[in-house]
Length: 324
Length: 297
Image (cartoon, rainbow over all chains, first blue to last red; front, side, top):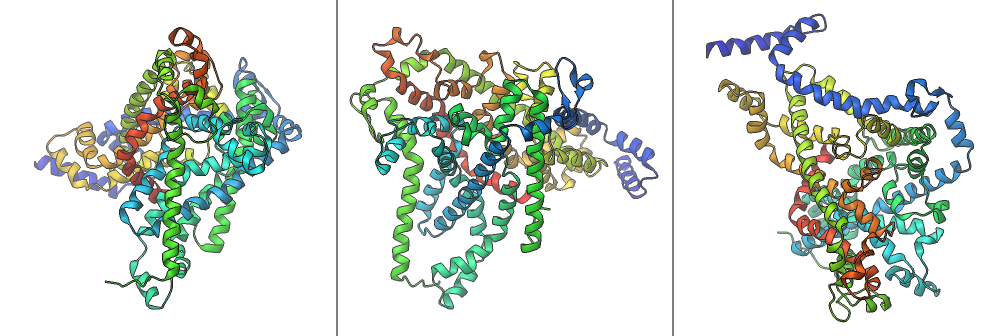
């Protein structure tokens, strides 16, 4: 017992006189004390190096005429050649336009949808009905993307349920909507809302439940009706949550759900449907043009990071809410 | 008790709001019901029908399911997916607990350095192609490992786990130490049971994510279809319109070609029913998960 106590004191001692100067000494002591932890660190660090830091270094491929047989070190260095090829190539503007269009449409329509749903659900007074609606609204989120794509394809094919509805609304004959360039974006955005609205509302519903009820009571005293309560109390109280999520969303504006695009698009509608990440997939993995693909991928992630930092800075200035 | 005066406007709003919520329920449920009823309907009638199917059309048929259950891909996919889900939960679970535990030990001096080393990967990453090249040069392509190891850990989960462990008083570890408990005993017998809610959330997210994943298989299993998860077979059936499934269908039932569409519906049912049965019971953990994530995010 006494011995144990001594050991503990020693620990406190070493933390106290720890410092940069005593680093080797402390490292030895720390190692002695936390041997198992040091050993457990090894696989974790190695894993991060292999699957995160090596790929980061692999970005040099973007500046090479990369040949797998030669490897990273012996492939020919071409500087910004891949980037120039991409910017001057026929697809650059199309890809940028399509990626930005899907990202922006998603923010205009997909972002507010869960907020509106949460606000309306908040007004439902019957607790049981509220719970049931909420639970059912999550359901589409749990259905796999492949199955969702399968359902979309089936419903929008010529003679499918949605295709028929669209045809009768427009007075035309049913067609395969996914084969028509003009329908890709609406289908993509609306199905995204269908799948994500319930799940996306969770966070707002939680924020709403923590609004101080006394505020509402005071507002009622002052004669505010439900609409005014919503405008002056509810929305301002969840505004920080909204802004935070908006910043995060802006940061991923170019990270369009590429796996969904891959499932839904076809060469006939590349004009509107092909986005940067699907292009990376095609030229990288199908055509094995690794250098160009890495360059395009790098371009995409740099633009994304710039977006995130810009939105964050703007929001910091205007609303004093920011991620970092 | 506050008395709320119900104005006419308020009542009208309530009515429309309730109707809107009912509409939401219908929108969420109807596509699934349509798929289900269509899958057991008379195939000829399904072909002719132009609207949503809310009851089985004509005589109930099981032909589609006969074809599906006879297709080896579905079984292989199911077996692989179950394996991937279980293995991934084990690997991710152990690694996340270990990493979270290490990162929360105050006596371990360099925990913040390592945390920063991990967190940096949230800001920058190599992207699809460089990661693919790494997996390839490790000779992992077309192995089970390719779907389990590259995504084994997420910084996000580690941070969540660390936060949960930090909430446990140090005195518990100290007293266990006094009784001679080693690092692993402390980790799995003392710490883990105390943050099992967070652990459950991480495992559930991992499991559902793995169940639904397909893109990693597309990347990392270029040749070996026998290792495909269920979702990749579903992709072949639903999206790339592969006809593998219909090849032997003629031997099973008459006029098998009629069942082409029904087979798609049936496959959706077969692959989605498990998760739809489970989700109402686990959704509260997902709600907790979103909350934990937002606090940290």
